[in-house]
Length: 184
Image (cartoon, rainbow, N blue to C red; front, side, top):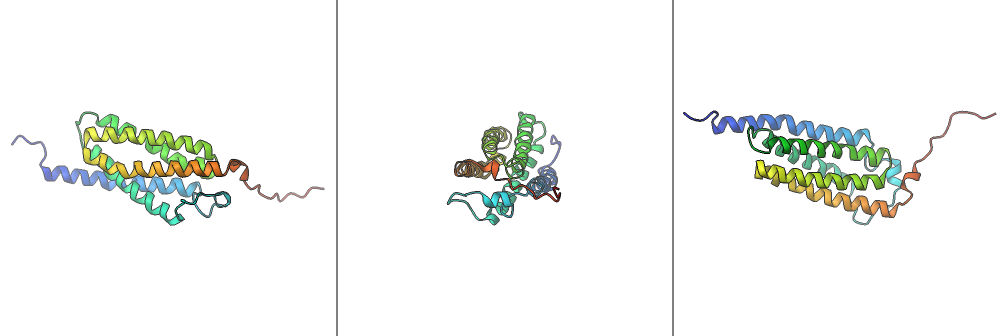
């Protein structure tokens, strides 16, 4: 017997990685959105002019959940590829692009930085493309699982750009909170 692990054992290991990565990435994405009050229902966001191709609010939750699931599965495949050349680089690129991805919602929705959000999403797109190429070198199927994410990032950057153009004063739309102090 020259095998270290059987094919069944390797599949089980990949499944175990997926049982960690998928919920972790979905949870982190959900927390980022919730903590930054992302989407419709945010008074600042609701006040912005939106382009005609803006999807309904529910579409974002569905899309991001599916994308995070696919990203988690792709990462699990890479984590399971012990000893594969380029594995460390692929994991590092994934971690950086994911961290920046998680920082977009607070920047856009909480800090009201539409223009900076656009530039950040372009950096995320470039890093996600580099991650996809790095994944391809390790596990081609993992790279295929990243393609919907790349497509969505292209759409999201277009949407961010359109919102920025429609709302040049977006940062000043912040509603001031009424003061409870009484001036005498």
